[in-house]
Amino acid sequence: MRRSAARLASAVALATVVLGSGLPALAQGPRPLPSPGTQLGDTRTNTATCVKGPDGRLTDCPKPLAAKALPKAAKDTAALSTVSDPASLVDTRTWTTGGGNTFPGADVPYGMVQWSPDTMPHRNAGGGYNYGDEELTGYSLTHVSGPGCGAAEDVPILPITGDLPSGDPNKATTAFTNAGEVAQAGYYSAQSNMPDTITSQFTETPHSAMGRFTFPSTSQAGFLV
Image (cartoon, rainbow, N blue to C red; front, side):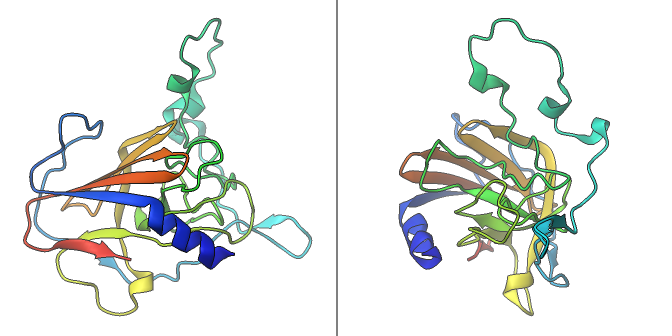
């Protein structure tokens, strides 16, 4: 079942690579600024946190973030009266910390693909992401919110610059930041690979996903898949 899902997801995910030319006019993310050097980590075991123990309770969960460190929308407790566009209020990073086990990436209801980041060191099982993490293991094509166990996270795609990392490629990570991150209903964008910043953008339809990766000017750009 999982292998079939992975093959299906990879068949319907489309990617566009932009190299050294900035983002086209329709893009919503910030333009990356190239700078020398790429840092690749190869020292961690990419093990999920916050999984169910034998008693059915979640274990090894990161501590909840302080209120001031939460994503913007998670701190907004103001009462609303009339909202003409509810989707504009969505911040999909809400409940991605403290064992929420949810993912922030692009998705639509009952969509076939959920292209979203997988981060370290507090990668939640199923959701693959923890707000505040500073390492990226890749943007994988399938995710599940709230399972509390290993699920989905098929076909991770890690955009990189420079030489391929030595050692086990499954342990490779690049720098990741929440600065400039956009997590909306049906659209997600983030920056990674600093200081040679790569901007990754994703959107969804019910049967497919589309990604755009914008690299800095370089002669060595690619992906670990």
